[in-house]
Length: 97
Image (cartoon, rainbow, N blue to C red; front, side, top):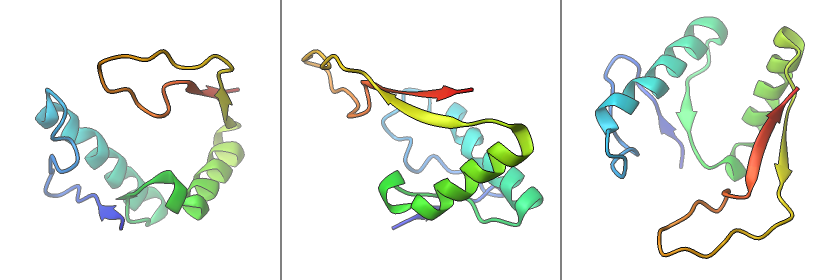
């Protein structure tokens, strides 16, 4: 279920695992304010697999307004095993052109 980011009341929800959650909390709040003011869009956070239409919409805006194209490039090498927890996207990077 998506979580709405409230830019009036900055929250650290979802940032509990960070060593500096209070410092990071302002980032989604700033994004939420920008999207609300520019596009009248309520900024929500949810897994990318469940937000395909929103991701496509943002990609279209970036392409049309800024000529920015984002594509994911998967590394062919396998991520090394580690005792620390790694992101499942550790072998994926975003490329802008």
